[in-house]
Amino acid sequence: KVNVDALDQLEKEGVIIFPQPRVIRLIQDKGTQKQFFKDNNIPTADFKLIKGKLADYIKEDDSFHFPFVQKLRKDGYDGKGVQMIRSDKDIAKSFTEPSLVERKIDFDKEIAVMVARNSKGECTTFPAVEMEFHPEANLVEFLVSPAGIPPYLELKAENIALAIAEALDIVGLLAVEMFVTTDGQILVNELAPRPHNSGHQTIEGNRTSQFDQHLRCIFGMPLGDTATLAHSVMINVLGEEGHEGNAKYEGLEELLAVEGAYIHLYGKKTTKPFRKMGHITVVDTDRSKAIEKARSLKALIKVKSKK
Image (cartoon, rainbow, N blue to C red):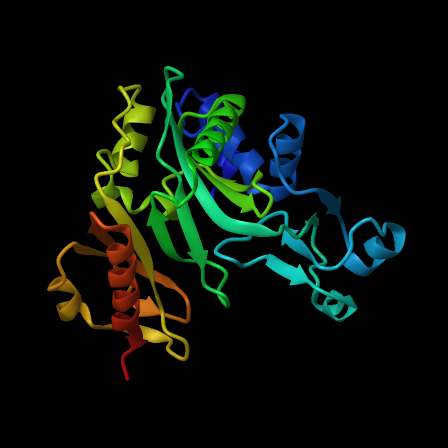
């Protein structure tokens, strides 16, 4: 967790910090983040901020109907601090810390746009990517670039991301996670002010990687070309269920023999269920082949614990 108070003090002492501490503070709190969307006419799901017990809130306000989503305002990540409230039975497990509740969205796809803004105020976006989440861990399992959406939705998503970057006056990278609803709308879900999981495939799949672009942003350099080189699929390498301890990787040699497959391990010595241990990117000129290859590699790579 980033200590924003310490960053504020450093900024007062003349240290230049990107992204700016005020941006980090706003985004760290999902409540202020959602209020920012509302205040700046950014399309997002209907929401209410609550304190204390969800049961008390429901007694006072019946405007939200089951099912809906409850999110902790702070300290949630990789699916933690988020839960679905489907019926009265789920209220007993609800969060009691400050949270927000929002209407469950009927969506067709989950997408993300990485937007870059340099210290001169110049902006650009990476093409939207499509995300597929693990049903239990609630974190990204597959990511396909570019997203399989029509051009008008791509343009709308990019314009929303640019509008958010401008309203924040951010310097650096910003990941904008969005829903494409079943009726063709785009609603913003959450923001992340940094190089992000939804941009990892840019290392091999785009002309400029998100990491290169981030450095260009903070040093006020010209922004790089974000065009895709080919279709790419990113797979998160997660710790296997039932395994916790020193990590042991299975299937690496077979993966290294696959054309167009690249593995990035994060150097974590220990594993636990669903812990992000690395990622794999598959690049191919054919979208369906890239997806098929990625799914086979997902089944091949296992992170287990040494006995």
